[in-house]
Length: 282
Image (cartoon, rainbow, N blue to C red; front, side, top):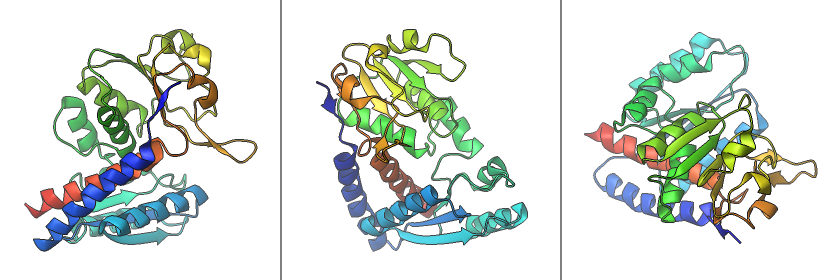
């Protein structure tokens, strides 16, 4: 049976360390602050935003929320981002996705000052990640790497397979694994014979948004399986992209859903906000 990678307790440990760091910063008159912009009324987004505000409260980061109507004009959104870019008391800016289809999310991400881009989506941060410079790394990939490191899982020289090529998870995670000297393959909806590729993975990351897609026969004995997916099953339960019950019999390590990657994403967001505050105070 696989060892469970407990993202929940690891995230708690990281938040406790950050809390101490925030207290030290406050003693130097630096008060880390996150501004969150949410456009529209997406139910899942509301839950995520609430979790982010709770995490800020827990570690002592100041928090400000901007709730915009879904019929807002693009220019109004860009104007708000520019205002926050110019505010010295705001260290991190996060635009909660998705946003309504009539708005250009890439244009919005590009408008966020890369020094305040705690989500790591501005092209400057993406480019810095690719060429190996210090940058803000998007929070889910950052959380995955942190989990592997904390559990002492060797990345260098391993075959890593990432299923999913989104700008939020798949692509940046592939870059992070490459930076740690893994041999990386990205699979996606057009990949042929996907199970032949996944069977060679020492580290398999599922980030495709299909409930329990990864089955036991697709996984190599002793593989490390990271499940980034979060889906609502027909019975209303939350499940990942991995058939946890059966795959866990074969893997050496596995992340659960919920309680795996999710809490780590928010912990790494907090890490990025604190990092931004430190960099800007210099």
